[in-house]
Image 1 (tube, rainbow, N blue to C red):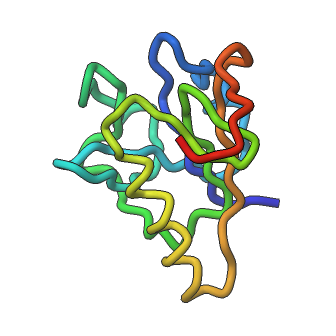
Image 2: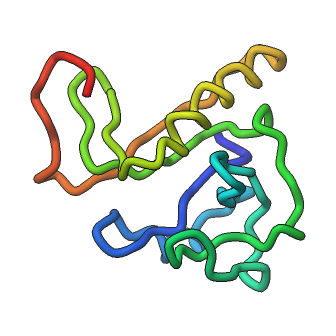
Length: 130
């Protein structure tokens, strides 16, 4: 039932999302690295360009999407534990973004659902945060 989905454009070593863009009927949002934060931009295949670390990102001119409009967020991870703590690639971008999605949703009385993707060999069975 999600109308607006935050995805990521995968890089080698991550769960591949490239086929998802054309298969999903929802409005798709991609992150754009801007300094130490992620901006949320409406996905358009003709607006993609190589950005941070060679990742395909939306152009800065792509339409901005407010964090409160995200219904479902799919984020990459190197590993997750059973308590859903995420280990990323060290930049902290999603660590800063995810709380913003929650705080933006408080004003709209709904919190976005979230899912993390990773390869199954990178699960951790620790009970404490990373």
